[in-house]
Structure formats: structure tokens, C-alpha cells
Image 1 (cartoon, helix red, strand yellow):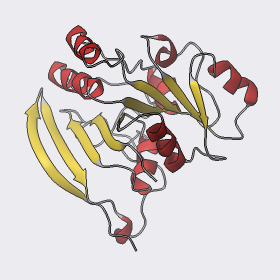
Image 2 (cartoon, rainbow, N blue to C red):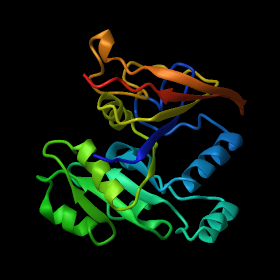
Image 3 (cartoon, one colour):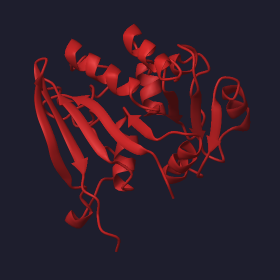
Length: 230
């Protein structure tokens, strides 16, 4: 089934952590990388995060630069990309920034067995997609997003969502800023959390596209090597 081109974009510490073990947001990159991410969002149709990121960081996922917003308008696009939350149990707070800040379309992806009343409340400010039971069916979700016109999707967290997308072969490009700090901690989140691969043949293989010094760190761009059909 057709799906959007999926770009995973994140910032991590030199030891591969997204934040502290308390899931507290950490400023890892600087102004140059913030501008790069703003441009990446402005050039995309949608930006997606998991519910853990919403609850921990309360992101708006809006485009910040007035010039980039003006450029989107000139192309006949809304100010901001569609904002998507993967939220099996419909736990997104109705007052979350992702639902309230800036105009535009929001999508909350819930499981079919999610609480109906919470889904109804969220439907007042977001389009609800129901996919999967017990966990969101990410393949079905991406097919649905493609159906509403999403061709380029940026995923910004968290680690479990990204890990699941990699495991399902749903990532096309992986961009990571590596900052000049060590966070540490066995329980601190990493870019691809979850059960992970057990056997080497299940590893996701990457092809390095570019390396760039940025702020006080380094930006790596990778393309995901596609496996031949079995």
C-alpha cells in the first residue's frame, strides 16, 4: 500500500540519549540546528510524534519562522504542516499545545479499543484515525495519512515510536544531530527504544548520505537501505 516518505529527525547526546531518565527535555542542539529543523518542518506535509513526547515536552510542532510561513502561503499551503499524535489510549490532553497552538489540521491516531469518550473530546480539535488494537497499527496509519494527501512525513519522537517504525521498515531517511554532552543512564531514552532486533539479519542498515559540523556538534544524514522482498 502507498505511504508517505518518512524522515526521522532527532537530536541526541554524544552517548545516544534523547533526554534524561526522567524524560525531562534537554537542549542538545543550538540555533543553527533549530533553523534547520524549522525548514525541515516547513518543507514537509506532516510532523508526527508519540504520546510520550506530547506528555513530556508539550510540543506545538509549528513552523516558527515568519519567512518560512510566508513561503508556505505563497505555495498555497497552510501555515503549518499537519500535526499527528500516535496515541493508542487517547491520552492527549485537550489543552496540549499540539492541539491549540497555531492554525491547521491535527490528527490523533488511536486504537480501535480506545476510550470512546476521550476520543470524542479529542475529535473537537483533531481528526481521529482508529487503527489497531492494543497498539496503533502504524502501517495502516501511514496508508490513511497518504490518503489525506500526506506525501512527506517527519517523525520527531519518541524512541518507542521511532523504534517501531524502523522495525516495520517504514523509515526512509534518518537525520540525527549529535550534541556535545554525555547524559548517561540505563533508563534514559534512546533513538530506537522498544524490544529491538535480536538477530543481526534483522538490523536496520543505513547508508551515510552526508556529515556536517553544526553548532557544537555534528549532523549525520542516513538513507535506510531497503531489503529485497523475501
